[in-house]
Amino acid sequence: MEQKKQFPVPGETSLIDHHASCDNTYESNGSVRLVPQPTADPLDPLTWSNSRKYVAMLIISFWTMVLGAATLSGGVQYSAIMAEFEIDVGYLNVSAALALLLCGVSNLFFSPMALKYGRRPVYLLSAFLTCFAQVLIAWAVNKEMLTAGRCLVGLAAGPFEQLPAVSVADMFFVHERGFGLSFYVFSISFGSFLGPMVAGIVTNNLGWRWVNNILIILAAISFVMILVGLEESSFHRYSIIEDSSVAVGQNSDISHTLAACDDDGESARRRMDSVRTPFWQTRKLITTSKSQRTFMAMFTATIRLLFTPIIIWCGIAYGAAISWLSIMAVTASTVFMNSTYKFNSIQTGLTNIAPFIGSLFMIYVGGQATDKFLVWKAKRNGGIMQAESRLYPCLIAAPVMASGVLLYGVCAAHGVIWIAPTIGMGLIGAAMPLLAQVTLGYASESYPLLAGEATTGMILIRNVIGCGMTFAISPWIESSGIQWCFVEVAVIALLINLSAVLIIWKGSVIRRKTAAIYYGILGLEC
Image (cartoon, rainbow, N blue to C red; front, side, top):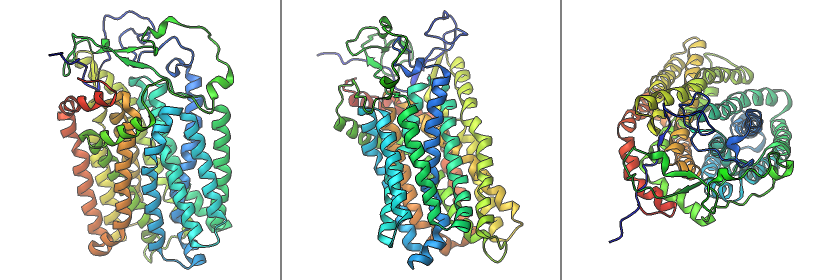
């Protein structure tokens, strides 16, 4: 009987070698191994200078900010839209839920497209569709046209929740990805929190349609920036080769089973034909992957990974965080514009500054601090990095999120001075980006060669949860009251985030048991 090939457990990487020499395989200190291994190809994004990486991330961040504002600014337009089209809040909530669902489902198409034909065409298509959707909304003459525009916004926004994480994996080494994700999470926070604030001011002074007119301009600018300035980061890197000394579940010599290579199997470091790359070569409209996997295989890979415990947990943890943020956003107008606080629309919008400031405090914790912790843990683990090292910030997010939800809901219910619920909003805003960085990073590193499919699966779960919560918010508050609704939410949030302890404990076992699924998707049998 033919013996099956043995491959390493996905999510376990040889990161530290104290006896390493200083070459292009290691950092300048000679101990931190560069994973993935860089090649000599000038098109390899891992070898880009820091300035090229930062320019790419700034362009992606601007696009993300625009999409974040476009998806969440609609809430502050509700009153004006309801008056003009004579519709109720229930109708608008349904359209918002549909948009959120489309946001997740659309990635089942966009993710394989980005993997097969490059990142740039997906970024460009998303920016174009966003621009067109804003035109539909700004010029809407009836509620049907308005709903169509809202749904198209959700469809176009799909990639902004997943593709930047893939671009970060393209350009940054494993021990730097938290830093790369910080760009992305900051732009989400900026667009999601400050976008509605600015939209409220614009609606109050210029009318609700001007919010969408401004978004048309911003989406068009992002399209041009991507077309001219964003380099393609898609790069066919890995081939998995047999190493009989490594069995699934072993840590020894893991680094020798994943080798950087060309599609002919020879070392990619053998060639350096040109140091300078023509401008338009890195900005092609389509860059077809050299991978032998078909578009349909990439599509089905997401479905297969969708039912693995790690992806399910990441989707639930991230989805719950977004749900608590949605509850806060939906109830803010009711809380601050009632007879107790008597805020106007502009003052209510300004409360979004609190969660934005909160997010700034935690972006470093989920980013560079986690990267440093990951290296420290690897040194204590014989040089082996395990994906679960990315999860420890959840233990910080758990009490922060729960206390924020509790402070906001209970103080609002009892009419405590406005600064108290606003501080609660700040704590919720602090925990949300931390959980985003952690779950996106963990999903990507648990199944590294299927990072796009893994993050697509968790985002789909996240948005299904968010869609359901959009429908459930109003009945929940009506049945329990705002105080007990938020007490219940705080308990649920605490339990979900503390469940990270179980994943930290048993995550390596789960990855070992799902290794066959992982390698099966890659066309290998182990």
